[in-house]
Image 1: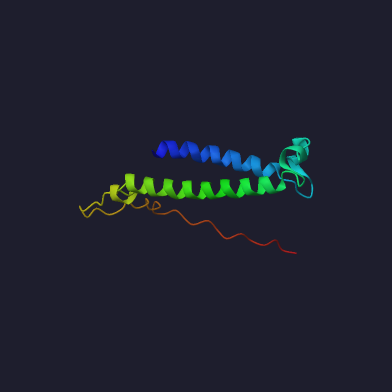
Image 2 (image 1 turned 120 degrees about the vertical axis):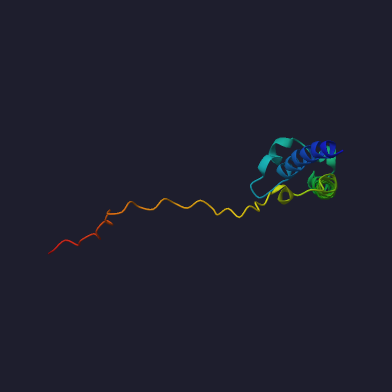
Length: 114
């Protein structure tokens, strides 16, 4: 069921992207390539139709996302944090090796005399 809803989610995202790109904007966008839409969609053109289509697709996308989230959490009852094992042996974390005795720290840089 989750796999089917995931495929529907991908198809919905592609469809909503196409619907948004076909809408007429100030720079016309891809709506210029749709041809003579006035005969198909009425006197106003596709603006009313595409707006309603975009709204409907967005609503279905949100509902599908909520359904996917619900089904995924109901299928997976365990968390990743449940798989963490805690060591109870009392071992300390490994420390960095100390510098060998007798080595001097580097000198601070000297400013040039003027």
